[in-house]
Image 1: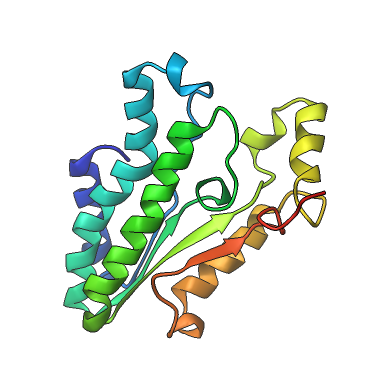
Image 2: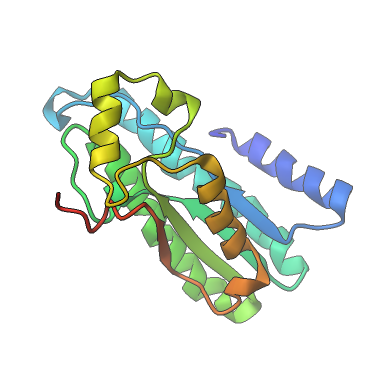
Length: 189
C-alpha cells in the first residue's frame, strides 16, 4: 500500500476488469509504534505516516483520474476519532497521519466536487478485528468502556457506514468526517 506502482496497478486492474472505477475505499491503517514523540525515531514516525497518509495520497493520485473519466464517483478514506476528537497518549504519529487524511479529504472534495467526485473520511471507533482481540482483557475492557455504547463495533457495522458513503444514498455528502464510533467522540464516562 506504500508502493505507488502497486496503487497504479490496482486502478489499472479495476479499469480492465470492470470497465472503470466508480468507488474507491482506502482503508489502510496501522497504529504503529506507540510512545512519546521524544522517544520516537524519525524512521518510526515516517513509517506510520507512510502507512496511514502517504498510501492514501498514492492511491488517490491514481484513483481520481480513473473516476473522473467516468464522470465522478465516491472516494473514501478511513481516518480515526483519534485524529479528530481525542488526544490519546502515545499515538502522536497515528493521530497526525489520520488528521492529515481529514485535511486531504476536505481539499480533494473542494477540488473535485465540481467534476462529480465526492470525497469523505470515515472515522470508526474501536472495532472487534483480529488485531483488537489479541490485546489483554483489561485493554479490551478499557477500549469498550471509552465508547458510549460500552462495546466495540463489529466489522459489519463499520462496513455499512462505508457502503453509505459509497452509495447514492450519500449523493449530497462530501468533504465530511463521518463518525461510526459508537459515541467514543462524545463519551466522558
